Image (tube, rainbow, N blue to C red; front, side):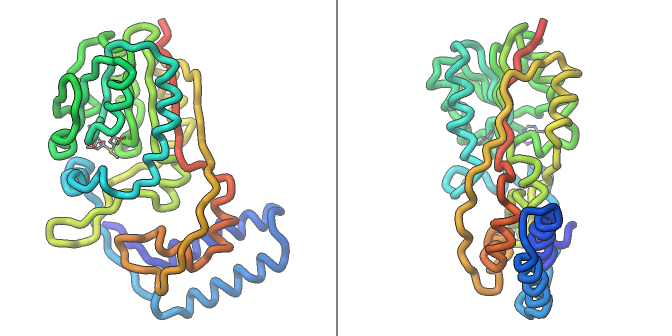
Length: 286
Ligand SMILES: C[S@@+](CC[C@H](N)C(=O)[O-])C[C@H]1O[C@@H](n2cnc3c(N)ncnc32)[C@H](O)[C@@H]1O
């Protein structure tokens, strides 16, 4: 269980903005405006109550999300043009879409002529996927022979594993020498700012899919330990859209995004140049 308080988020954003002022990005007027805004937030009775939130294992969380996964407005799907550009440089071959979900990215592989095996830990997500073959499987134990794949693609799943090292080693195991590993995920800095999937439990209680914060260095150490050489890394930083003002911050299901409009100036300062996604292309050495 975690406790999500709107003030914890809002004052966190104010704090991130104030740190940037402390290190020279903003002037005295900005600092005083932030401190005044914090006092106003603390006095706002509409923001006085937090919410107890259940932490669901990915298997349970995605069972609840599967039917609506492709119909939502998901900012993380912004990884697609980047992944498409990576994949355009890779010749067609034997591909694995690992943690394929509903097959959103399987399509990118199939369109480029790959023979695609798609696996996912959630039968509910996998039931929507279309590939040459599909199988329920965990990322830690892929049902694939050693050295049998030319490409492994894994999108938006690694922040759900507690430790990258064994999963990256498993990807390296199934890749042929010279094979390609292509990854995307929500950037760890966004995970830390609350970019974590929300769902409702069967009885309607607020829940989030358990999500971890893997630093760029955690990826690098896992690649090096597994004999994978990074050839491309991108951290796109789109200009954030101006947030809409939602009186009282809106209902929990829309947090934290619906809270942003209460602190637009702090958000603009705190979010400036913060990457949205983390994308990698590695080759298996040897
Ligand atoms: C956000 S979805 C991404 C699906 C798809 N790759 C995409 O980019 O749209 C995350 C997927 O990872 C799967 N997943 C998470 N942890 C897993 C694990 N340890 N083994 C297998 N699948 C896992 C979930 O079931 C879910 O379908």
